[in-house]
Image (tube, rainbow, N blue to C red; front, side, top):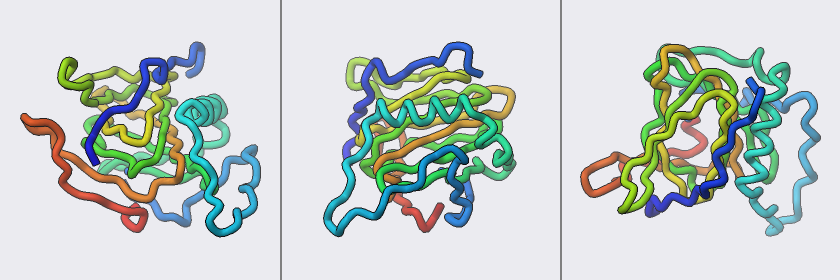
Length: 198
């Protein structure tokens, strides 16, 4: 898959006044106020993916309700800690904690659309902006939400002095993630992982 960024300029927003590591699939927990999952659709009737804008709304609204997720947060010195909070036919939501120095490396989302918001702390996001822009580095402070399309490749890292906590939504639910090295000629795909490794 060629790493052509598909984030639009209006997909980075900051909520004013608002303040993939090891976990098992059995940790999946639905937030208390989230609706029950929809009935399983008939075979061959796969629900349409949610838009990046809808995913942005999901994570932003969840970040504003810390009572639904703050008690799940754990910190791991070994690597980023994560836990799936919700899983539906059309999307899933993850909670991730980051200690200083922890990062994802460049990766895609296996064709899923996505969004993440920084609920606590601050992160940095790296992506390629095309031949004219080169490497883009964005500061992502608490209250900021990023949303992206199915071809987006980025590296997210904690370069701050304290921990960070983020909420992520993907649609359809993640089925794979490829990892990349940034070299002189651009991004080079180096590996791929699937849900059995999460």
